[in-house]
Length: 209
Image 1 (cartoon, rainbow, N blue to C red):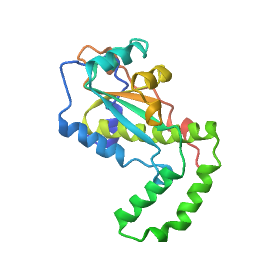
Image 2: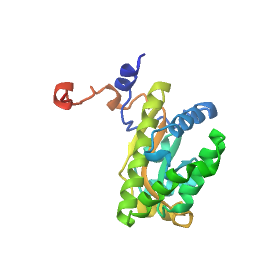
Image 3: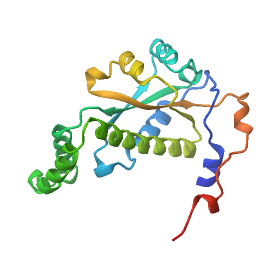
């Protein structure tokens, strides 16, 4: 199938087959694709937690309106933003650029200074909004990659973020849960897989100026 057919095939799975699991290779390919997602400045101010522990997932299910996807999917991915974004994140990114591209760290001084100015101007609310947007970019990449790989996914916002933070001890790590995605394989009796996808027409959605 081409990319359009793959995206037509995907849907937000309501019922996963708990007996089917991703292979390690499949999981790694999804994570590798998500790692390549677009991110403002390339900073990637978030972390992706792969939740497999059954006991932890039962607790998270209770914090997710008892939705079955939390425990029945192969894995649950939690996108958590960095709550305290500061110079240390920029410095670590600059060092990564220097190492990856084999260039002097000093040559990045201008870029580093600009980024620190931008980040430094954000208040707590601004930081939360901006870092959350970056996490959602990564989520979009994950969903597209999963469709291409023939793997099902369900992006989810119906959860108590504060309870997730407590259960996963995210505050101690300087993180805060933003959005989650269950990944795995659809159950054969999930009726939503047969429903026609409803989207705006291109004429309604797109305006060429």
